[in-house]
Picture 1: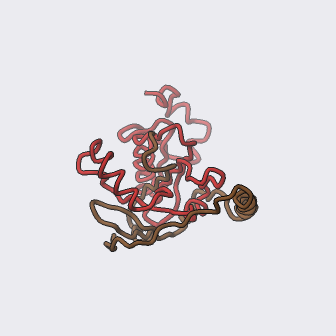
Picture 2 (picture 1 turned 120 degrees about the vertical axis):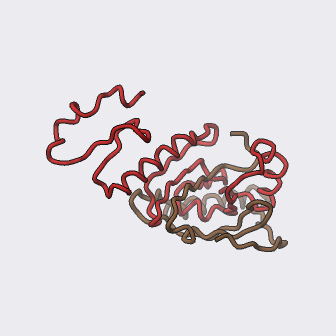
Picture 3 (picture 1 turned 90 degrees about the vertical axis):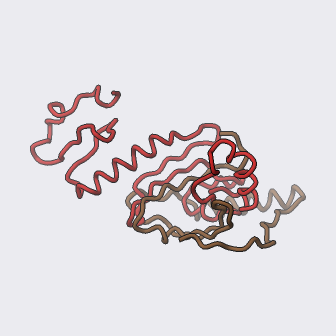
Amino acid sequence: MSIDSQFTHKMWNDHELSKMVEGGIPYPMLSDAGGKIGSVYGIYDENAGVETRGRFIIDPDGIVQGFEVLTPPVGRNINESFRQIQAFQLVREKNGSEATPSGWRPGKATLKPGVDLVGNVWKEWQTKQAFD
Amino acid sequence: MAEESAAGCTRPTGGPADEESKEAQATEQLTENKETQSMIKVGQKAPDFTAPGYFKGNFTSIKLSDYLGKWVLLCFYPGDFTFV
C-alpha cells in the first residue's frame, strides 16, 4: 500500500515489476491517497507526504501480532517476515503452550513455558542457537 | 474476495500551490496529526479499511476484514518507482 493511485500501480507493475516478477505482482497493490489508512496505522509521514516502510502481521482473528517500520532507504527482509509468520502460526497451533526462542526457524526446538522452565532455559537452549 | 471495479476518472486532488498557504496547511496538519496519529499496539485489532487497488490486470477494492480467517502481511512503502 502506498499513496499512489491504482493507475500508477498498474503502470509500475506492467512496465517494471512484471519484468522482475514473472506474471507481475501476485497480491493486490493498494492505494491510500492522502495517507488516511497509513495515519491510522501510525506510519504516515505527514511532512514528506508518503508512507514509511511499515509492515504488519495480522492473524486470522484480525489481531496485529507484529510490526516493523523502516525509513525509506532500507528494504525489508521478506524471509524474516515469513519466519515470524511461521512462528506465530506455531504458537497459535499449540495454543500458546510452546514459545519460539530467538533465531527459531521451522524444525528448530521450541520452549515450553511453565514453572519448571523458570531459571532453566540455559539447560534447554544455547545462545548459539540464535545464530545458527 | 476482491471485487473488480471499473476504471473511473476520479483522481486525488492537489494541495495549495503557493508556499504561504502550503506552510499554513502543513502546520495545521501537524497539529491535527499530533492528536490523531499514534502507533497501533500488538495484540490489538488491526484497524479495518477499504482501499482501491490493482490486482492482476484489474482494478479492485479490498476490505481488510474480508481476509479474516487468513494470515495477512500488510506492507506500506513510500511510493511506486522508488528504488528499494
